[in-house]
Amino acid sequence: MQWMPVALLKEKILSAGGFVNAHAHFDRAYSVTPADLPGANATVERALQEKWQLVDSWKRVTLEENYFAHITSALRSQQEFGVRTALTFIDCDPVAGTRALDAACRAKEYAATHLQMKLVLACQTLKGVIEPDARRYFETALERVDVIGGLPGADKGREAQHLDILLEAAKATGKRVHVHVDQNNDPNERETEQLARAVIRHGLEGRVTAVHGISIACQPKEYRHELYKLCLDAGLSFVACPGAWLDARRNETLTPTHNAVTPIDEMIPAGLCVALGSDNIADIYKPFADGDMMTELRMLLESTHFYDTRELIRVATENGRRVLGLD
Image 1 (tube, rainbow, N blue to C red):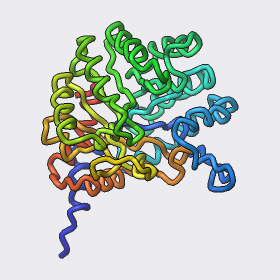
Image 2 (image 1 turned 180 degrees about the vertical axis):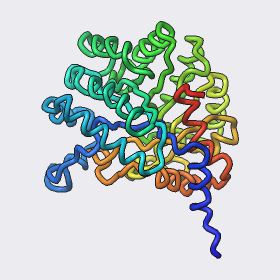
Image 3 (image 1 turned 90 degrees about the horizontal axis):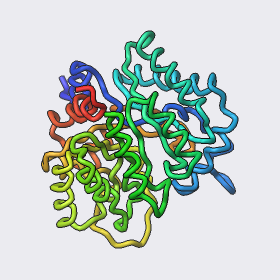
Image 4 (image 1 turned 120 degrees about the vertical axis):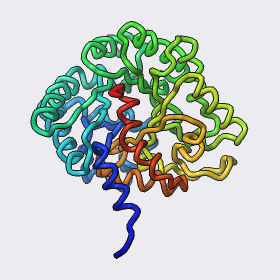
């Protein structure tokens, strides 16, 4: 009889309560079209920051019922992949209006009633949180989401102010915060450090999660390990979404040799809590992604050469519940 570690790992995860998908965007799942695929102006080939704007055309015409269909389709697929708990960011901005969030709130009830799944909602702030219209939708969403979501890069040049607004909202509401940081695989990005220092300054240790943290791996070893100490002081946890960043484009910037993946092989031994997410599913960001969490875990463990099965089970299960505030 053959011994298959991957099958055994999945079996143990399912027996531990199933996968926790700690970061997703279900409201845009399955929105990619043939017109988005490679051609003269292929949408899927554009840079990340361009895609933040390109999704507007889809958001403008998508009705609440369509959003509901996208989210619930993703949930049914997640259930088949063994996911029992998930967090999805939901677009809350002047373009999407409240349609996506209205649908997500209904989908949260659908997940509990029909799928026996726990769905946690976070606000996606693609238009930032500083400009008046964007701020209004952000503040309205605070009453309805479970987790406060942030994207400092959406307020480029004013990232510190963006973080202050998120963290002040966290203090006012008592809700956890999840923030997209260090997504560009660029050593000039040091958003995780900025976030950790802001968390300490606001006295929110243990209540904030950094999503992605790809650029950490670009940094020199000494900086990385000092950063991990700072993150421990801030009680900062992480969500790794490996499939979302393996496609980081090559460039001529000189960095330590690394994979474009959250460096869990250093973070976990340093004492940091890391969970697992799928990020985008079949949209212009990741057209071929299907949200299979076992595939995500495989990519994470292979790309970081991390084979501690006990820790991997925690990454896929209890760490996810922890960063969602459910443990």
